[in-house]
Image: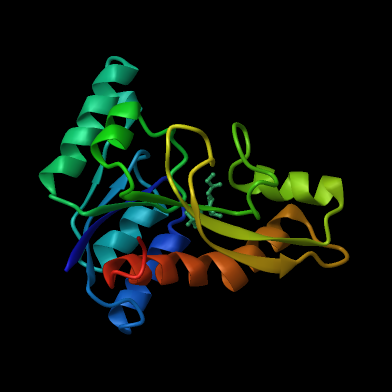
Length: 198
Ligand code: GAR
């Protein structure tokens, strides 16, 4: 059984998709060992509680400096003996010590077709604002392994989604979530849990 830590920052709709797909056995051989948020009081933590999952908050605000926060985050993940870290809308740069310790065992969902609209400064709604500003007609989402760059690791899955006339960043974000993110993130976890990724 693959033990997963799901790291979140806000709404947690991707976390919910993972919870639901484990419940209906679309994802097999995997369990959520812990949900960790960097923000207190977010909806994602409520979703974890609702699903009876171990959950906690490790916020930079509760530590004197970044190094102390980084250490606490690593210690928390280690304490749950996880095999895979899933960044499901986790809007914190992952410290190098975590990437070293969990090499090839961290995946991230990004709301565009990498290499478009990714890297530093591209997260959440900003990605969709940039896609609309550029006028692309197709966007989508990507699941990739995390390396020391920002959104530069090996790509595992991508799914395209059409941009429609009159889209706002919010409407586009919703379509990308529904048609791509909530499908390919659970799919990637199932592939890893069942040994279909080298
Ligand atoms: C998702 O759209 C995810 O792809 C994005 O944040 C949102 C979180 O939503 N992540 C990034 O932009 C990472 N660079 P959620 O909390 O409802 O899952």
